[in-house]
Length: 419
Image (tube, rainbow, N blue to C red; front, side, top):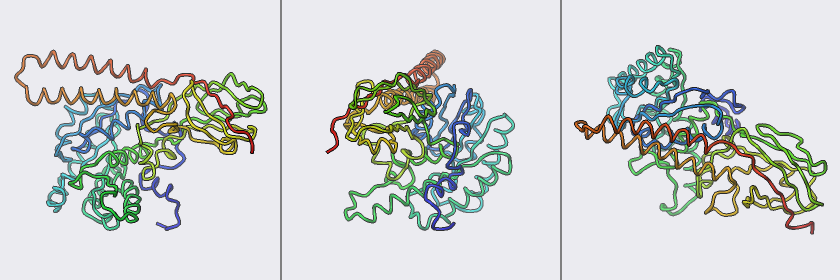
């Protein structure tokens, strides 16, 4: 591939999607039930929770349910064997599948026999999903901590390449998670090369070099979301100060635009969806994983403001300070905050609340799994399962309530005049 190809386009091609997606391109539709099938990296639940939160915030009108079917140490063959119990019994309409590392025993069993078992497992999963009417996305395995300059031709990548080809031949879909993550990994390695102290170096992995840490899970979620056609733009509003009007409103509605002399501007904004946020200091990861530019563009443009600096407040929360020139060019306010220790805008606070609810769903599911695995003889199992299902239903309802957009009152106040 030509070296001059812009990095954004390169990542999009490797992830199996385009850079111009809109909401209609996103693969998860109203009424879908999504099941994440995989090994321990999936069972960690982190990348699945990110995809869940993105969908709930970005498409609050779509009723999409999410379930995790990750199993530590599992292989494609093992996943195929438990499809009925862990996937179809959930009513899955969309299945993402992420195996590979265990299939070759972390590289120790990378022979033809074990690779064939992987191919057979992938073939069985795709065939069964197609027969049951579920849309299936075969993902290549997550990147390991191996040198990204040499890992392109390792058995793990080449085996996954054939697995993705099998999926496409059978009418399924494929997302090249490994190459997409490797693009991000190259950025990490490039920054590390500029550092002198090992303790300051960034990694995407746990000490074993296979399991993912928080950054690695974010990278995996990012690539899968791009592969599912996730749009970059949440909404965009352009306001004209002189005419006190909304020049453009995409994915949102602007009302009650008013100004006071030459010092302030106010308006109400109601969005169709909200941007995803990741908590304290999360923006530090965006130099590697471009969430801000490719998944969460929540834009504000204000034209013809008098020269000066302006404080942006939303629902009386201080967001940030911008010059009139900066605002005229458009700013992404998704992650703007006056304090890294606090959520920024009310959309950030909503996303923070949603993350806690999504984590609560995960903890409830893990609790039930542990009970079923280790207390099989308990007479309380049916009652616990019934109560857990009821609580999970209520948590899903609460998630949707928390993620629902609300009208926000914006105010720009001039704090510094032209010098």
